[in-house]
Image (cartoon, rainbow, N blue to C red; front, side):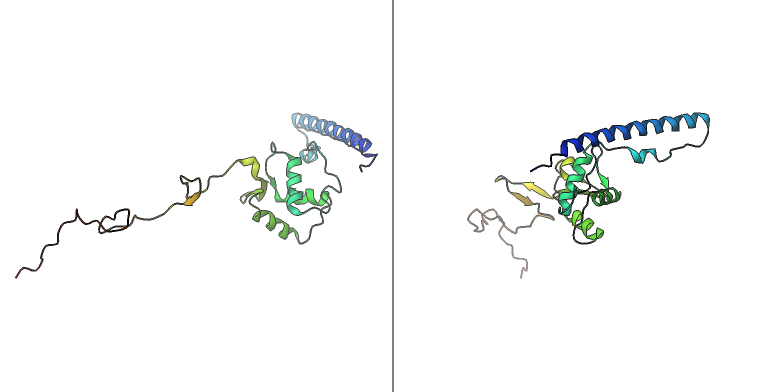
Length: 184
């Protein structure tokens, strides 16, 4: 059963988000004015205070499996923001009460191995949800007539000394007769 105070909590959380957005907007305006006046920018870290639209509850990821918690975080973050760096993900999990078994490295390794749910971007050390990126084409796969996937055969085709019929018996009717190479 839900907590009867949840609607009030949600209302105040929404109010806080609006206030943070107003404060962020005011700080940005002050930074622009400072830039025009050629003085020191008073709020250089203002971008870090932007609210993502949904705040993470303190217990959001408590008792959840690593893959489940990261999937939930990425869904909250949204596809429009795209993949999240590992530091962003780990920070969000910690703020959300994640207490998974194993170390940070164990959790990260688990996500890298879960290629059905996540897309890992090694260059940026970031993860996104696999569904955001569509189907990847498999290399060296061909569809056969029976809709079964088969690996392509590589290399040269086999050389046959004679043509074989469907029954597997050699058909040498078209073959040239052997000539005697050692005349006496």
